[in-house]
Structures are given as C-alpha cells and as structure tokens.
Image (cartoon, rainbow, N blue to C red; front, top):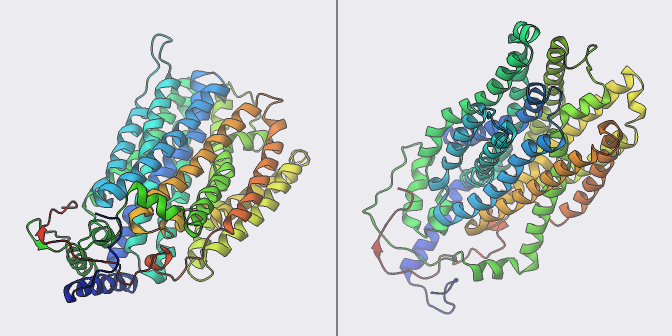
Length: 539
C-alpha cells in the first residue's frame, strides 16, 4: 500500500462523508470553548515539568552538599562534578529521541506515564545511594547512573507533554496552554531552592554540631522529595485519553476520533469500544520513505533546522548557567561566608547562601519570564518573542561577560551582576526557552509531530552537554573566577546565532495544526480501506 492516497481514484459518497467528518471533528477541537478538560490537561502535563525542573536544577545545590560530605570542599572536583551534572542531559537526549519516536509509533496515551515511572524510580535510587566500602563503586558513580536513568524519563516528558497539549488545545489558546505547561519549570526550579533552604535551616543545629554527617541528610531529602509530585500525577497520566488527532490521522479511525472529541468536549469519561466495527480511511502513513519525502522539501526541512538549532543555541546558555548558578554566584563573591567553608559554621552559611541565591534568581527572572510569554504568546506571536529574546540575551551576556571582572570590585557592582543574571533568566523564558518548546509541538504533521519535537529537544540537550563539559573543563585553566567572564561572552555569541535560526521558522499563532503541517487537507482521508474489526491501540 502506498504512503499516500492513490491519485485518480473516484471518491464515493461514503469517503466524502468520512473526510467531512474528519474536518468537522478537527474544527470542533480547534474552536472549542475553554473547559475543565483543558485545565486538567495543563495540570497533568505541567506537574511533569515541575518535577523535571526540580530534579534537574536541584543538583546545582545538591552538588555543593555532596562536595562538603564526600570531598571536604564545596565541590566534588571537576570530573565528579561534571559527571553528576552532565548525566541527566545525556539521558534526557536519549529519552527525547526514543519517546518522541515511540509516541508517534505506539500512541501518546500508551507512552504517557511510562516516563514518569522512570523518573520516580530513579529519584528514589539517587536518594538511597550509598558510598561503598571499597573504591570500585563510589557515591559519584552510583548517582551518575541514576541521574542518567532519570534523564531518560525527563526526556520522554518533553515531546509527550508538548504534543498532547497542542493536539487537545483550541487554536486561539494553544500557545498559552503549552506555555502554562512549560512554565511549571520555573516553579520546579524555585521549589528546589526553597526545599534546599528549608532543610538547611531545619538541620542547622545538627550541621553546627556534627558537620558533614548532617549535610548528608540534607542532600538526600532535597533530591528524594522531588518524586512526590510525580507520584501524585501518575494516575492522571495513565488515564488521560488518546488525542483525537492521533486516532484520526495515525490509527486512521475517523469514527472513533469523532466520538472521542464529543466525549472530552462534554467532559464525559473516556470510553473506547474494542468490538466496534469501523471503517478506516487511507491517510499518509509514517515510514522511512515518507519521512524522507516530507523533510526533503526545503519548506519542511528549514522548519526542523530552525527549531533544532534554536533550541541548541538557547540551551548552551540556559543549562550552562542553570547547572552552575552556585559556582557563578560564588565566583562573583555573592554571599561568601566569612569563615572557612570546611568549618561547620562555614558549611551552613555556604549552603544557606547558595540556596537563597537560587531563590532570588528564580523569583527575579525565571518565573516572571515564563508568565510574560504566557500573556503575549497568542497575541504577539511565537516568532517575535523568540527574536526579541535572542537579541536581548546577546546584549545581556555581552555586558555580563565583558564586565565580569569590573563587577567584582564592590558590593554595588556585585548587585548589578546579580540583577543582570536575573534579567538573563527573565529573557530566556520571555523568549526562546518558552518558544523553542512551543513551536516544534505545532509546526509538523501529526505522524511526525512527536518525533520532530524529540529531535528538536534533543538538539537542545546536546547544547546543554557541550556547555556543561566546556564550563567544567575551562575551570581548570585559571579557575572559575577567570573563565566565567569568557564563558559568558561565548554564550553571547550563541544567542546571536539564535537570531538567524529563528528567521527560518514560521509564525504559528492562530493557525490550526493542519495548516501548519504544509500539507493539503482537502480530501486528506483518501480512499476507504475495507471494513474490519477495530483493535483500539489506546484501549
């Protein structure tokens, strides 16, 4: 059977009816009023991103705790610190490619929740990690393995949550729904810093009396509590319905998809009858040949290049800073304790300063940036926000990089640096960090939407890996105080390149997903395949 409907076949009235039903069902989804189902979809997907961000960025603080416990310093050492921080983005890259492909192959519903189970198990594994009696297995090695596994689960969350949200959303609010899901990252980052502060203060008497033994409790609590929201969200993810677009365009079952649309628009329980007799229509099918045929067209390939490189450039800076915020704050001299870091008082003050410093960064830039995008994304548009963000970030990183050494000279100058740092966080999120997540979830046809989002997101994690490895290795040359300024200058260069990759992207606001697919939707259903029993893959 060919990948596309056979040209020249005369349509029967029944075929035309199914084709009309498909377009009518899609119109109902695209024009639906905002309902409780939309709220539920955002919350179920958003809790996953809250957990992802908590688990990813908690390591920036936990690494300082681990250094105090196992290395007697605020850092574990260059290689150990690198291994713990880079393990998650490596796993995330794998998970984004794997789950992105599987969600198009097996279905969104079938894979949704699997990635959350992986995150829960891996988070528990990290919190229960122990130092071996012999040197063959160190605490660092154990945590690296668990953080890689956790990263695979986090990676799966990106394409699944993005695609499920976009395929259920009405056109006029699709950008805001996707942004609200992704904005939970800011609260996850903030919560990690708050939990770190709370456990540090709670264990203050024990840290002052027993030192590293008490700090060993703090990092385990900080990491382990990250699985609580994931456990709460798991049931809802396992019970969310299959998206009508997947049922219609990949399972090619228009009648079941039409019924699904009616169920979720009327907020009825999801039901699929495995014994129903249905008629399938022949629609374009995902295959290697079809994939090559679709993306070999420049109008489609340039979009994938634009989404992938923009995410790559953004994550060079976003994770380069996010994973190393504690190092950056220490290097600039923000909140440096008066006493030695290896004393009990110095340990407590270091942990407290690092934790509260991350709260300032989250509240001062991360969270407001996400919600600024939420306000403007469906009116101003995705592309202008991304262009503006990259342009402003180029200027901010130039100021931070070239002015780094001058900003260490006084407390007022240090405060100016922290303010610029907050502004960088703000315009990353009121800019490309939000839009690089949204656009790939909209700009591709249903049969490749999850795969293309996974490829784009994995490109971003490649940037995160490169940034973290470069950040870590450059610290060996002259120390972090010398190289951080130059690293920030490098970030400015990549932000500038992001401006040009954004020009390859279409504006996706207020357009249906079918319009954005670059495929003619008239007669998309093609010819009818003979009647056969429906085997619902999403039942």
